Length: 226
Length: 210
Image (cartoon, rainbow over all chains, first blue to last red; front, side, top):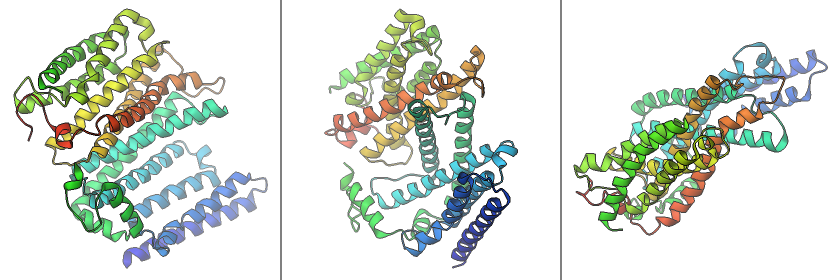
């Protein structure tokens, strides 16, 4: 129960602060671009998504993940609303790293979920670390490819320079490394079943995973593997 | 596939991987050196665990490898500069490298399944092979960036002109590898469909794997 209270407090406070900053930004800068206001409002609402997901009984996100995600959203909105992206060196580097850590955490919890519900998949903690790195870096490659194609197709500048691309990769690798370190201690303290059960994931997801692994929900046979 | 053929494919692949290193140095594309070293480590795994030089991976996995490596060696030595980085025929080199990387990645997954207390289904083996190939292509971007910097290409932000062509030089390898690896993963899904998982994981021609 304490965890739920902590989650609620973190989400609501982040949302209220961003809402306040958006209002202040709109009032003090009368010529403020719509983009900043919309970003502020969207991020303020996005901070409440974990509460909504829990209320809809879809998933109870882990507290560590919520804190990391709230920090990522908050820093991004803060950077947009108060021009920190322009004024503070390396602000985008920090936000990019934290965002990639959020993605890596999604991978971490996703791998644990699949490990528990897919009878064809068994991994040691060390292999889970490897999976986190592989999946995060592949997402990074896919995103950069998307950027270069967008630049070619629409004449925009999502990619500024090779140095920026390499910096993005490094941020993504750093985010993955942070989560690998976190997962090392997390897996020592909590076993996979404990973590996955605490998420109270809606049964339709389990049925989906089980159906695609050829495993019946109540059947732990290994015959399906071949 | 008969085990003697697999042994020959293995032997030829090892020799060609070494020749790939020489060809890579000749065309000044060190990504092939890294790929070949990575591949050699896993080509030698069956011998390492079975102590039998005749051991090999499943032939259906190994079969394209000698042709891919031979194609690179021949084209590199005949085309020379046209096959080096950023040249007009470099995409062909990248496709061949992506193909080799996918095969080496699959060997990596076999090693992981056999020796690292990890279990994957056939589907996950394919997915993680693709992930390894894409990750390696992403990591090669660091080498390509260093190469561009040393060669004097403009790699930093320049508001006066577009960096698109130089961004593309950096991205070309991972873009082609990403699409080719997706295509080859889908191909392997059907190509290996009727091969039992225990055969995919076994080292043929020598002692059985653990």
